[in-house]
Length: 357
Image 1 (tube, one colour):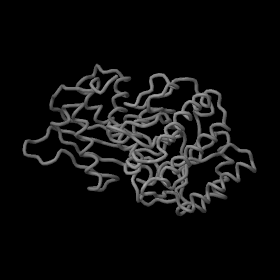
Image 2 (spheres, one colour):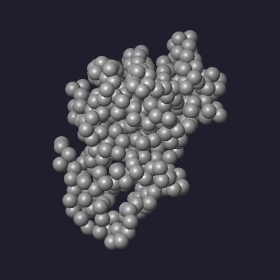
Image 3 (cartoon, one colour):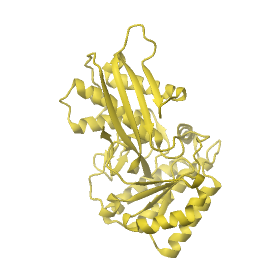
Image 4 (cartoon, helix red, strand yellow):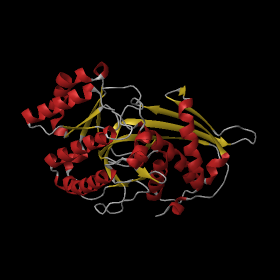
């Protein structure tokens, strides 16, 4: 498909209300660096989460002729002017693909179940839930569109708001970016992996250690920009493509040793790009390193297949099979909570994607 296949031109003034809930996701193979309109320089692959999610409600009505602006926005019940520029930009993009949006006014209420801008992909869940609400407006005017097209276009629009958001529409495992390893993969939208997946990965656990809940000093958007002149960017893209190819075998055969090796390598490679950018920056905190050391020590002593990954932030995503849940939680509470902000963590697991409320 091309961008033109996602243009919907019908215009009819309508009134209504819609709510969608969409989860965050955690990339196992990271995307870092983009080109043109939110297209990835390398393919990525992620677990869709369950409990880390955003619920977005849109009330929409015809826009009045003299009305300034076209939306009101609240985040967790409060007005958030700092988000307005991003939302305004996204709505203008959506207007290009759902023309009727231009003629309506929107009251947007968004609620997160987890801290914003801390290395848990809040933009992924928020922009994907917003895109799904706009797609529901399109479906109201064209109830003949298939579920497949609905989800594909929602993922396409989500990407234009936040690249990683395109991986939050479906689950449990989604890839984004053209790759010979996965049929139907595309840089235009995230694609649900339909090839063989070992049972162990369908119920994988993800406990998020909230080491730092303050807003990041360097945004992911800025980090992506720095990849354009990064001296190691080309090598990083080659590495990511190689790891994507390896992951197809891992997902099929359930090789946890290889899973751990690639996942942790990808996490450190992502942060290595930050450390070697110009200007360079560090998002990990001292407690991030201390917790990682504890995780590596525990795995070596117990042989329990528990590993870590990080998004663009200080917080650690602890990954392990569901069969080790009890032992993992004892380890977390006894050894890792001391590294967390006020002992906080989020107990999450692999999920099935967004849902209409």
